[in-house]
Image (tube, rainbow, N blue to C red):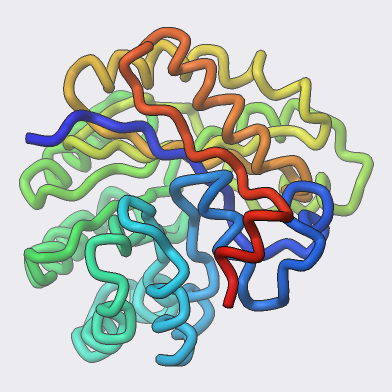
Length: 288
């Protein structure tokens, strides 16, 4: 059994505003994953929700991502939102085949369900999870209010996920809904993100938290304060959580993710440190 780890990351790894600020100035387009993986140890993969990347692109990611790094790619919306998990075997197989070069680094795969996917649809989710290959790891994000009340619908969901060894993705949007709605990014975040009661449950060994914060960096630690001891507790239980830190525009997300890791490590001193962020000089050694 390996020692538990805490992985932290952002919603993306390629934001050109990070070049010269967090990443070396000479980071070429398409190779941002190299410096990113020294700042963070995980990343969400939203691009697959809209379409599968080219094979050569996935191969480049496989070259650039170090061992121990984790991508959490979303299943395409054709599977989750259009087909609503029905008759999608071919699409699932195509997704897994395309991501196969990443191996265990593509874990877990995210099944993000629409808010209209209700407790009445749990039978569909059960059949879908039951038909998935067992050599891949899966996590489910639900957005219907009834799954976040602590009642029978939530218990049924959690039992179903445990039966199929799938994680539950926890989304915490309290900060962004409480924050200012001045910028376009702030308004869009409120429009697009669900406002749900936060349910800090861990189904399996690798819980996932998506924290959606505020634009101002120093406003966020107060909002994630309760997550720090919770994540420390999971680590003490032998779990290996992943926490993704967002802000409406994500401009300050990489250092915020590292700050969260540091706060947890202050409670769990045995937690391995994050890599040292790459410097401009080291960039010449990392990029051919």
